[in-house]
Each structure stands twice: as structure tokens, then as C-alpha cells.
Image (cartoon, rainbow, N blue to C red; front, side):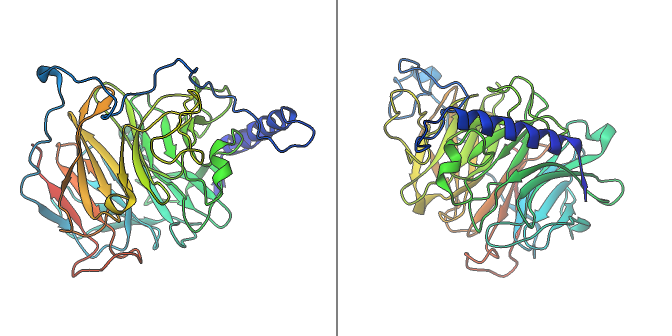
Length: 389
């Protein structure tokens, strides 16, 4: 598998950041180095949560989510579908975690077409072929991006669709892997940069380590380099202090929201701002902000009710796919705040992994009952489509 020069540049940057961090430690080396990313001062405001936000006038309050409408089954018999991304014409690309296959599902449904099997994928536990993203310039470059677990790490690669997948070009490596907490969601933002949600790979200290790409949201150029304008020059880190990010979505005003697995108590949705520290492992859910060092989530749930994976936004509504909670949470968005979440489809389809808005405005939802943790039903796993409101 080809490895781009961007990977080598990242390795060199990581070495420099690590040396700098080590130089900042005392002789005993017990205290972790301070992160180079800016953090809010003790007086800087954190994004408001529904519980702490000032009441809004009725005209400004978040509107309830529109009715989901009548569901239509688009595909069935899938093997742990994970990544879900749309081509400009409305067809979807779906990643099967354990088979490493990329499937094409027509906008109108039907039997999925196998496009390629991504080479180098080493499935196991929560790892395998995970997130997919379609290049913003797909009409010209025909590129598709994939986040996957390899033999030694998690990595990001890209391939062209017109040659059947070909031999993927690896553009970013070195994201530590484990049986769980591999993150895996990737998406292009409104700025044309590639964002990646990573997990701490079961080593909590990585989330606060500025030299580790784990427990972070990364912001990269399409070639895999640290994006210009990141909080620390030459670093891919956009935000830190995350446990396991698996959902990324932007609203119409360009605000980035992310869903994150908690440990034993609280799952969360965060409003992501560059350089902010979201507290893991010092804080799970809402808690002590460390004098302004940590940013609280907008909304939390007990882990039994969520275990959040995919996140999508349509208009003023966010949609959160819950695995353990076996439901779709709708989130009324109002600027930097979230109104009272509402549970939909509770128990109807089992574990829900990915949710995405198609080019025609329809909402697509994938189940995850064949992943070893769900109760498999006839026809699983499946993709369900809800028409545009």
C-alpha cells in the first residue's frame, strides 16, 4: 500500500512536538507536559448547556424536530455497516467493518454493489474498516477517503472510485489501535479540510497528550498534512480531551458538533471549538471545568440510553444514532445550545450506528446488530431511509 509524503511529514512533526513536551517536564518526569493548544481562561465562557443557558424568548426557542415520516428499507443483509457517505448523485457508499468491503447503494435502494475491498484492514473488536468520506472535489478527483484499523495502528487512506478502489494511498498513520476506543468517523468540513474523530485506544492519558493523535479531533488537509490555521502550527490536533469520538456534523452556520462515548456514566454531544479541551479523563460528562481549562458538553445521557455513534444535522435538528440505547435521538439546535432531546424509534431497529443526510434531504440510518453486541434480527443489518421533511 502506498504511503504519502504527508505521513512522513506528520511523523517528523510528532517527533518535534514530543521533544518539546518532554523539555517542559521537570527532572522527575511525573507531571504531563502542558498542551500547546490554547485553552480558555478562567473567565472565558464555555458553550452554554440546556441546563445553564438563560431562557430564550418563545420566538427564539428551539423548534421541535420534524416528524420522521414513513420509513423505507433501502438495503438489508449487510455485515456490520459502519461508514456511510454520499456521492454527489445521491448514491451512498457503505463500509462493512469486518469484511473491509466498500459497497455502493443506489439512491432508490436495491442490492448493494461491491466496489472494493480495502487492503491492509485488520478487523478485531471495534476495529476494522470504519469511516468513509467523499472528497468535496469528487466530480474532478474521484477520491474517497477511509479510516481503518491496520496491523499496527489506525490510519486514513484514499482511493479513486473509477478504478474500482485500486490500491489506496495512505495519507495519515500513527493513531494507536486497541480492541475498543478506535474512534473512526471522518468528514470534510465546510472549509474543505478533513476532520477525524479518534479514541484514546483504552489508554486514557493519550487524550491529554498533545503529541498523541488519540483522544482528539484532528483537522487535516486533503493530502493528510496538519491543516493551516490549526491551534498549534504543524500539529493535526484541533481539539483534545476526548474519550471516543464517533460522530461529526456541522450546522448551517458552520458550527461543528461531535458525539462522544462516556465510560460508565455519561455520553455526550459537544460543540467543538479549536484548541478547546473537553476534559477526558479528568471529567466525564459535565463537571469541574478545572478553572476554565475544560469545556463542558451541551447535553449528556446515561450510557444505557445512548452509546452515541453517528451524528447528522438537517436544518435546525441534530440526529444522533445510539447503539446501546437502541434509539435515534433528535436534538433541537438553537445556535450554540441544544434544546430538550427526544427519543425516536426506541427498540424498533435495535442498535443504530450511522445516520446521514442524503443530497435529496432524506435521512439514512444504519443498524449495527451483527457487530457481536446486538440481537440480530431477520434482514440485519439494514439501511432505512426517511423522506425529507
